[in-house]
Image 1: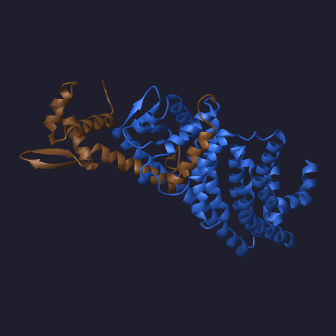
Image 2: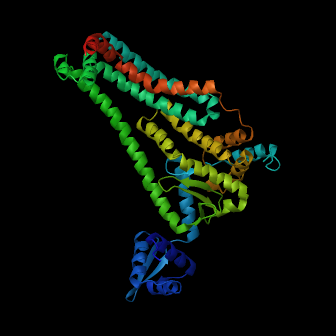
Image 3: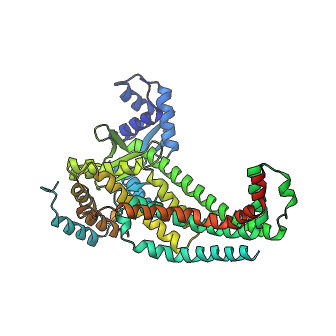
Length: 123
Length: 320
């Protein structure tokens, strides 16, 4: 089954995030081979690309590199989501949020407005 | 020439007055919330009309009427010599006119490209990160991201995607989730990001102009109202409203700072107590306004040329 490089990147990042310890190309390869046929060079290429993209950091141990994620999946997600929300405010054409940011007072006012019309029964 | 000067002055005065008065007039109008699609068209037409009226003013001054008349006559009668016989452009005025018009158009085009290309690059970067962090949920037809803030948004573009976080899925009922995603898909299907890019382009090209500044904000607001209305065709309005409230409340500080919330409250009120849609008469009036805003300045700019055409070339046409 041919899969896109993007999907392989995603799979490898998920593995790297799940290990919670550094891993070599060989480690990842053996892990992936439990589920599919895959060449060493393919995994190496993708991990090198993830390193170039700034998602993995690596250090040389002997002849090979040992890789680890630059940040946790949670931190990376938080950065992306915060960025997406910030951008929707000043560069609206990029992403369209269901809801812009609100102050707590505004959120309270919203809740009060809904209490007048409870969702049940009226739908 | 005096007619041209009067027309040019009129067009310029219109552009100046419209740039200041139109945002007040339109911004205060309550009908916009009852017909967001029409209101979007009126705002866009207003922005275009100001720019076109400046271009028309330049055109009227720089290009003497007989030239336009001959030009059109040439077009109709395919008579090449007519132009050579007529009085040519006066070099100086034409140069200034072309300079002003060119600068105006170039500025708009430059900003449009910058806005569109910038947004596109950002979206591509975001979508790339989403392929690592999110997973496509076939049943929802949306990207689900593991994250403990309640967020829903869309990444527009050729392969637009709706995105929703696990926290939002946890706190919304399935019906509310469907309503939220319908709202996002309405943005995607309607290519609303292009409407937003339009507003962004004009506001960025001519900063400080009340019409364009207000236009950008109004277009952003109206696009949300339109998406609410489109989602409400298939989902109860009260569910969209309750989803809005649930997504709005209880957010972490980093996600609650900033302005823009008034429109959310207005959206909830509007969803819960919708005003009747515009009647046919009001819609026709709105459509006429769009037509006048778009065609008025251009027709005014061409008027001396058309008059000249009729005065000098009618007989030629009749003799054919």
